[in-house]
Amino acid sequence: AYANIGGIYMNLEAYDQAIFFLKAGVDIMGKILGEEHPQVADIHYIIGNLFFNKQNYEEALSYFQKVCQIRIKAFGAEHPQVADAYLKMANMLYAKENYEDALTYCEKALIANGFKNHRYKDVYNLQYLS
Image: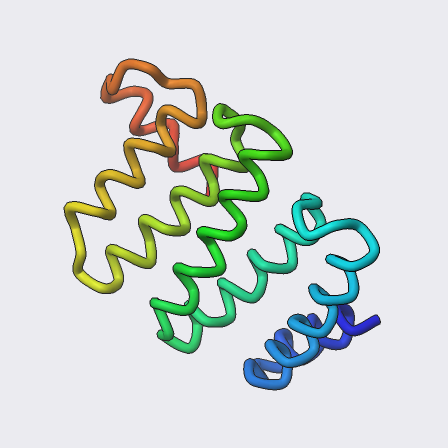
């Protein structure tokens, strides 16, 4: 219920209220499902997006790092959801004008999505992940 209320506040663009309820929801879900459950990662993902919308890139980055860690444990290092988390971290770093680190995370996303060789068509296909 807390996560649902947080989602409603998010749609109303009341980001602080949304974050409050989503954090409460992630605490409860973490206790029920375990801190490393993919559904817990999904709520961290939403919270990260909210911090990104608030231009709090450091906080957003920390949430996407949690998402990435959970998804790697749940799905393995080569999985589209792991690639998506890497791309979110790249977006945060790009927004902070940290282009070299953003590029590193884009490359990690390529590998996580199963592209071992950095061919141009593979990079082009990454646009369909996000």
